[in-house]
Image 1: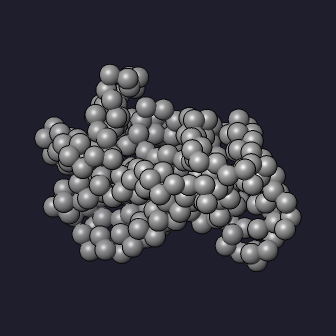
Image 2: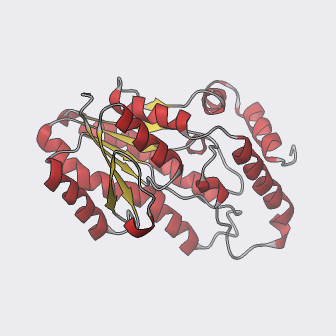
Length: 270
């Protein structure tokens, strides 16, 4: 794509979204970044901030239309905004699961649906959906989060087949733990069951340790930018641990992958 591409990145207040928006600016793109509340959003040089809550249909439609009114087109959409949650599947209330899906899956769907008519009219565009290695791996005590990312994977791959006829491609980026507020501020389920305490707490500590020793988000941001502006690939995995994990999942038998995962999370061998 041209270096003057019009790019929309959701969730640019911090972390991966913020680093990604800045990197697009450095590549010469005109960048719009979405935030839930403009009053609380820190400024980001070169990025035009748009107030948009991906959980609210009217807010998404208004936010995307405001960009179209200014620049008449959108070349790249990066669906980055998302949440995580720690808790056993049995502990997770339906309402808690629904809230997570509302952001991680339906939020992505709302934004994609709002942008596609404009991309179809120009017969070009790239949609980059930020998934996770937990979109292809299990995530004990983050089961609903993993379910949302598995949904993102299936929806994105199906979408890509549907929109190719219009010159549009969809792609996935699959990071692993990154030093962002997504992991730092991960909420826990409210109705905890004592039988899960020991393992849940071990996983929570493992997540915290992985986050604190994880790389800064610039590596993931670079992968997102290349997924958007470079040659199309269905799945793009940042170098390092994320690439290793997805490779192991693809080529090794299930048993050693399962054992490695449990050991990493501090769970028993059984």
